[in-house]
Length: 83
Image (tube, rainbow, N blue to C red; front, side, top):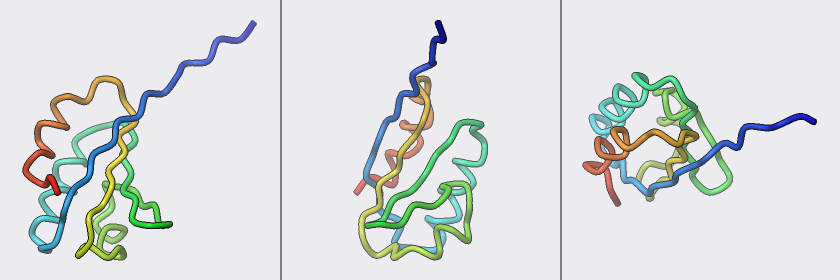
């Protein structure tokens, strides 16, 4: 019997309308070793990639998906970007 570890995902909606916000967001997410992605419509990019984020339409709300069950500290830091 093979047991699979279930990955827990948490999701928050943020706004990154200013380029300084994008840079600050990436600096925050880069310090975490678990997977974090940003979704905008049909597009999905690595939340730790500044080029990936700048390829999205940041004038609209973005969805952050965090794949960790222990990310309360990150969620607290992301409150400043809440949409």
